[in-house]
Image (cartoon, rainbow, N blue to C red; front, side, top):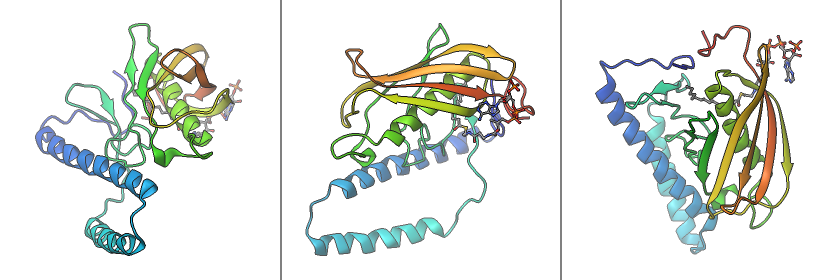
Length: 216
Ligand SMILES: CCCCCCCCCCCCCCCC(=O)SCCNC(=O)CCNC(=O)[C@H](O)C(C)(C)COP(=O)(O)OP(=O)(O)OC[C@H]1O[C@@H](n2cnc3c(N)ncnc32)[C@H](O)[C@@H]1OP(=O)(O)O
């Protein structure tokens, strides 16, 4: 089994932890809704001011108790690793889509996704850095399922066509080769008909301190 640091199958407190993660995921999802509402809102200025005041109060309530340690990778009840704080897959992170990555029996990875209005770069299209972030993560996941978890050393991205938001897309990636601690991976984001919009190659490096099971 592949574990990143801090991901421990602590079954004793699993029930409470699950309830808390579910609550945080719900908060994360509601905050995503808020972010998109802010991006798209056309309400009058006095309403903007009133909502801002309410949000400041809510922010203060959450800030009364803040954790200082990062959220770690952890095993979910189904044994699948998850990382609630992650910027790409984190259910509790409003910045995350969140991406849900599936592995295939051939050890490739895939994720159905739809970008949101808050991911806009050029007007009407997704920001190139956001596409790169998604591909970085997906390529890293492909390296991990191939047995070579690592950190991104190099990521090369080719933007073939503008990426729409609010439409279903498919991201896929696969391991191509490994040499020692270095692993090369390829991936792409495409329309449902297979038209490739963005493609990437990445070199992932297993840091010298890691075993096959991640940081030690
Ligand atoms: C069952 C499974 C389920 C799995 C389910 C969970 C899945 C979970 C998925 C998570 C997916 C996360 C995907 C996001 C991944 C990030 O976002 S990682 C964050 C971005 N990247 C970083 O922050 C990396 C920062 N850099 C570093 O930490 C270090 O420079 C590195 C990359 C670890 C390398 O350090 P090092 O181990 O000391 O490497 P070093 O000994 O200097 O060099 C080793 C070799 O690599 C080469 N190299 C080193 N750096 C580079 C570089 N940047 N470019 C090219 N070559 C390089 C060297 O030339 C050397 O080559 P050789 O001489 O051996 O031929």
